[in-house]
Length: 354
Figure 1 (cartoon, rainbow, N blue to C red):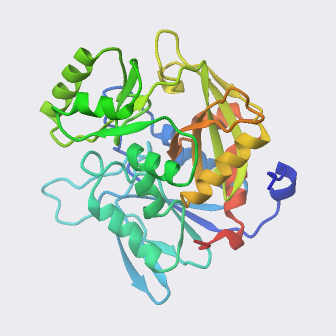
Figure 2 (tube, rainbow, N blue to C red):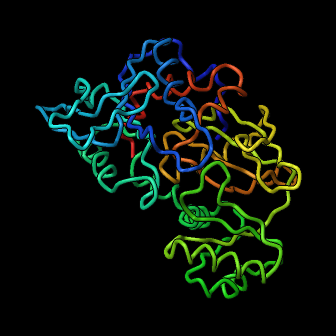
Figure 3 (cartoon, rainbow, N blue to C red):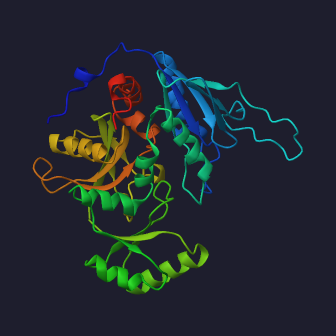
């Protein structure tokens, strides 16, 4: 199946809908400055307003929902002018909520963009909140099952292999003293990649390992301070660049090429890597579409290492993002990918197709 051109599936006119973004304005765990707009929430609100989509936001912290007839009311704390949630003080006797958001499955999309990582930056109750909307037939972008797969790099690997996609060899490290045994199961040579299977942010948590001595020491140190941190070893595939392909409802919105930084293995734009729009091959487009479909994603960022022959050999899939950042692709893909995403999500035929 060939990917349709942009003009064939993007409509300037569509039936308006309400987009409700569930966010977590204090989600950052790094010790570097991070602006609220970097999550893409403000961008979605801005573009949504331009094309006639009502965008509402609620913070997971303190949020709850109750059902009225066939609709749901979503209650959450107020936001300040900078988009930060206003948490109650310990001596507050009256909690201050913003006006409840009325959600109707006939015209409302729920987009969780702040679910975070369980045990690090999230509460189990937030997953339960989204599941309530799922049970009532709301269109969720993306649902809990797909999100859960993509938040684990190892489970993503398992599913990629399960469905026959090319991906770097990956094994879990199950104990602080099991690093050498895991390396032997990987069946490759140094250098290799050591990653946290979950909870990494903008490339932090990804390390290149050159020797067994270093591998043992780093694993022991990490698991000393976080005993149950899920770690994986991954085959190192040398490349000058990788690609982020944006897929929405089975259609490719566009792709960017990210140069691997000098004296590093990472290509994260937030860490200083150079990125630009790239023309994808038909094979790369179809592979990204197929991966998104198999993992049940309506909106995805699929990360590839290009193959030796991009026209004939499928790429290696590095990672699949169920909650992709939008600011980077918005700046580099021509024609506002955010607008294309919001328009494509308006196709009612794609709602609840799983």
